[in-house]
Image (cartoon, rainbow, N blue to C red; front, side, top):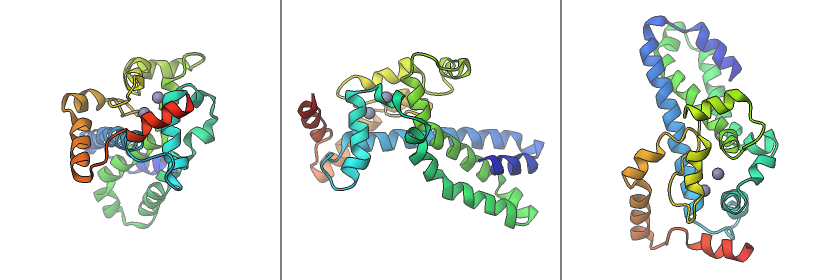
Length: 214
Ligand SMILES: [Zn+2]
Ligand SMILES: [Zn+2]
């Protein structure tokens, strides 16, 4: 991230400012949508008894509904390791582009790279932002400021997702898309289509599992 940030500053041209800002904004919105999609998938489908992904991927999402504050006791690596790792190939590719491509090509790809850069930063920070949304004591004042201005997921906003049966407000990066997606009945429609095609019921395992553990 630091190396790419250096190259972005180095190749920045003021005349592209509006395109750069638009690309950056789209990157952040894409990260929010991605967080919603992954979170919705893990909350809604599959069983914790599935091999490999059940225990490693689905279970933390389901457990988070039963004990929402346990995330606040995870250290930086446990909270963010997975998401930071996902961004590495894309950021590495970008470093390579900045180093290897001729100046003209770098400028051609510059707006796209600004999009990918902001997308990567917000994907990497998603779990940290989610953790902050559950933290009520000792947050740095700049984090609270970002939450209160809804630049990152605000605490009260995320609480809507934590009302059972956890079927809306899945986006946990900025939360910007939660309201429009809810108004569009986006998740309900997606669940309806999947249920129609596969005859799997959404959250079928979730209730069973929650009762077993409480
Ligand atoms: Zn959830
Ligand atoms: Zn949460």
